[in-house]
Image 1: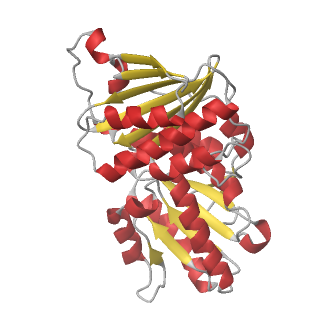
Image 2 (image 1 turned 90 degrees about the vertical axis):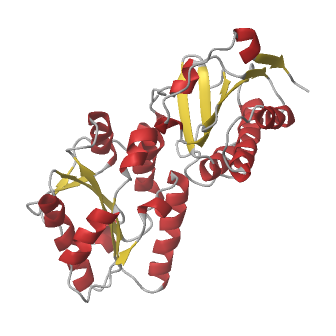
Image 3 (image 1 turned 180 degrees about the vertical axis):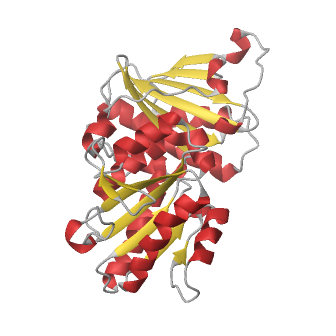
Length: 338
């Protein structure tokens, strides 16, 4: 099938690129961007520096393609959605009838926080559908884990191939269905230790104090302040919209701090909760705030209820430290419904 679909009529055309060499990547990306430039469409590239430079050198010297840093753009999924929507709204306001973007989730994000990026790859099929957009998401099959490629296959309606193909993906799952599926929450190493604190039915004020009291990190104060805000919002959500008991646990060391909030309810009914702004009356505002300020957020449903895990720092890069203190010294369990 031709790669040259009429984007303005189609809405969002979201394709995955699976490549195993620089040549394969360029064989897809360069014709895609060149066709957009020829048509007078805004073109954007957000790839790792070494791959961005390959694309830059392969394009005509006069190309007006905009290159964006993956570090800035892909810091958090919700922030990426917000930034891309603002960028595309500006293009449309300037008269663009088509937009082309090539991007990639940074490898370090795939390694440490893929779960919320999988949700991002699914949610953007809805979040960007109002724009005349064609985008391609690049995944190197030599280094991308199998479980990630499996999610990529289920979150992209189309597949772009080095021979010029633009194929409908039979394995695509619509966002409400994909986002509603239970996703296992892989524990960080630190979560295999006894938590520093466990609170039952805490009020938001008690939750905020606990995070501040058990902060043992060397992280900037602003990052801990953001975690305090997120924890307060999520605990308030659990008390208002979840089901008792609400159980909050805290782990921390010098590199990171992890907080889980669990209740026995079913969790939010909105599959896009956290990734897209929500009204104040449906309980999604707290998840939206958490997704804006935390280093990582994970959501998990199982037979016991709904869990939100909030993180400051980068626990996926840590090995976890040995815990040699006694259980009595390590755990402060409080029933605090003040």
